[in-house]
Length: 394
Image (cartoon, rainbow, N blue to C red; front, side, top):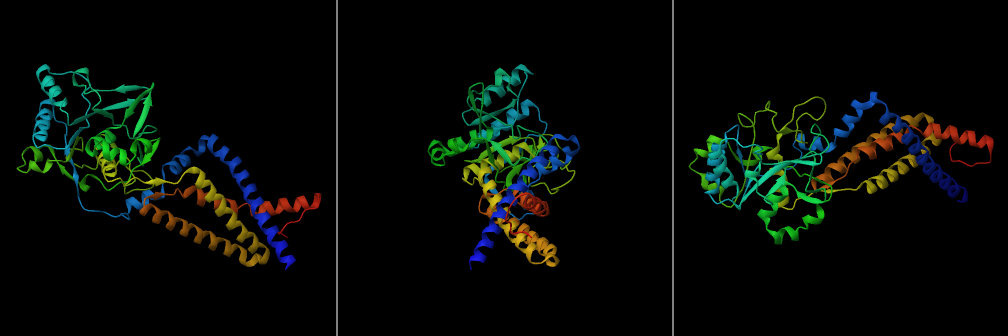
């Protein structure tokens, strides 16, 4: 009994030391990968990949009914007078909020600009601007709407990256800026509900987007389709978003104001952007209206889970290595395969209930650590020749 306890203690100690030993080597090797330009394409692929992209792309998420709270209208490449007419027609139907994802940077025709500017001052309209480094790209002074405006940036880091998160609030030179989506959602919800959902405290850094679909997931109209419609009354008490959605609407190859999202059918390799900016805003607004925010497991807890998983796997592998070298390799591969499948299934299930667990580092570090068991064994053998040292490994 005492011998068995002693062996168990040695096994646990070796597994712990092997975990630390493996992490040190991986940490050193990671510096080589980071600092050698040869690995840049690999780093980009790893950074842009998420298991949840497959979840979305393969339609594993629940595809609900058409979202009728938000209405999308394609502005195409219409001129300012036509946009003024569109806004007038929309406002006539008494919507809850109207978001205009267009920037009127310069003045053009004086009369048309003046009537458009007057329409944009309507209390139900939220306009947009872009944050570029430390400056703002805004409407011309004539079209400014003061506080009734929000930034439309969706990817501050890299326009070519997949848009999985959004920034609700950011600060530039001590001035607080709120995003276009959150401005619209706040106006639609009202102060009472906004405070109830505690969004002001939740918007720190990046917030994951809970996508419900592309433009077809929302009630949508082309420009002419809406202007000629006899059913404009459908806009009453709705959130209406005006923005560019291709010509013709939803054109796969029209990449103007289009970004990569997890819904892209091509999850690896080359692809074209799949979703228009205004549609991403619609997904964010839908999430905020229904308080369907996703909870992301912090890096600290991912680190704890990774260490715990690595330790447990190494306990089993070190034990098997001592028992039988013949079955060791097969057992090792089987255990690692089962571990990967279980972790993948767990991540997908957690995402289904609104929790994001980034399993790539957990699986990668655990699998890599098992590759260093032999080196750890050799190290123990060397230490034994130099000093008195007990180890579970032969």
